[in-house]
Length: 134
Image (tube, rainbow, N blue to C red; front, side, top):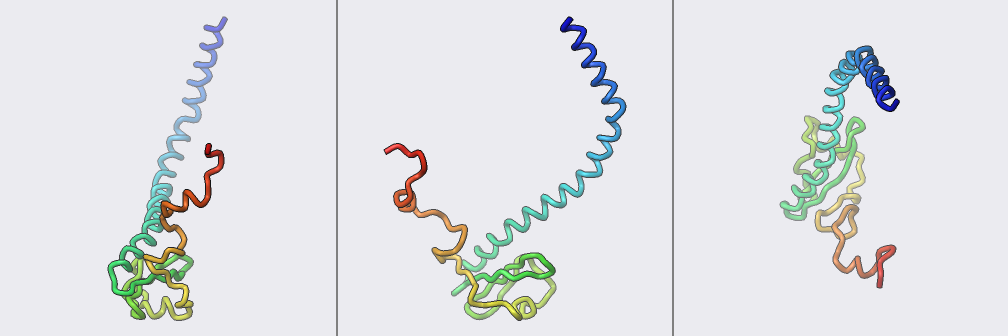
């Protein structure tokens, strides 16, 4: 009896595959390119902040300011009070990017209070983990 049910199940699977297989194949082919473009865009945004902080770390009195251009974040790298570069690179002048920005919000690469900093070894002792046995 179990063998008969398995045969019906396999037959149904084949019928559904023949009926909807070409449709699913076409959707998968069309959806691959937009998904790949979205993933590439996400990964490039993620690395942009890190690259800008690494760039600022190589400069004398380097700092980074996040501004927005056309709804996308752009990181402007400063050496002292002079604008050096932007990440990602744009064909818009740097002066235009920071025209109305608050320059006091610049972040230094070695600032211990910036978000996303690496945890110090003594942080683990200060705040015990939940469920840790003593």
